[in-house]
Image 1 (cartoon, rainbow, N blue to C red):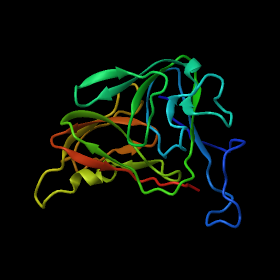
Image 2 (image 1 turned 180 degrees about the vertical axis):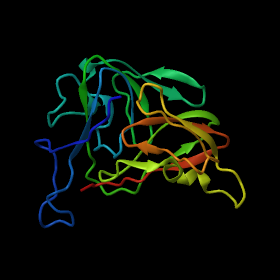
Image 3 (image 1 turned 90 degrees about the vertical axis):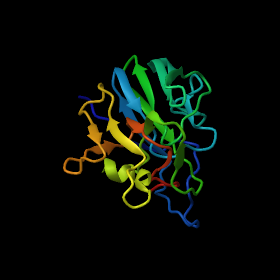
Length: 220
């Protein structure tokens, strides 16, 4: 099974902190990973810079300071987002965006790079209201120094209920094409899988809730 590998990059023309600011010159401007040929799940761990969070870049801009998305559309056959309200798929097209905690399916024509131009604006960790019961396809929002977290920690905000109550979700399942499978129910406390950065996971919601992430910007 293929693994997603992080690639840290600095893109010419992007803002970087100067030595007189609160941040130092090692501030992260770009974080990337590689997708294999065929199907992959994908989420982004960090908030993209303003105007840079499209799923598909404008043609010819990938890798340049004018890049306005995370993937070159020339490398992708098709991509889908799951609508939890209708329990149906939505085709992704030019102009569609992605934020941390969202996840998509991508079918790649060739091995290719995903590149997130990281926001330089100070932000709190992301959160997302899960208003539909049933299956939700969700991403992981982890900082650059955290490759994975145990599922019960990553979904910790869905346990924030009165003492003795069950969490908002029942189980977590990984897409079958994503390598090492994850098939886990919340009450299995003896064998808790780790959920990876850059991936997406199926989470079955028994009640509404709010999923909270773990990454902030800027990043170092």
